[in-house]
Length: 100
Image (tube, rainbow, N blue to C red):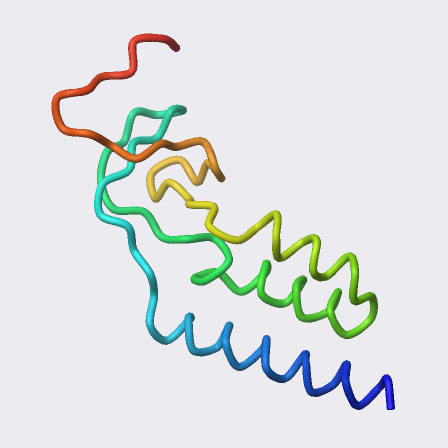
């Protein structure tokens, strides 16, 4: 019975990830703190295959680490210029980051 619950849960999560991959979520204005790029950035979990595979593998094999990984990785953005993960902030027009 537990295996059936795991398989159904993994299928639902996999389907949601596949749906998100076909309909990418791009936030409008974000600013990278590493390279200074300002513009649209894709979410890491919704648009890249490796984190999706890792999440699915962890959910199938180990439920709790899989949920922790999804909770950690969800909503992180990747800079298209330097590929920095989660090193960005929402860009506000007229606001400059003064520290570096």
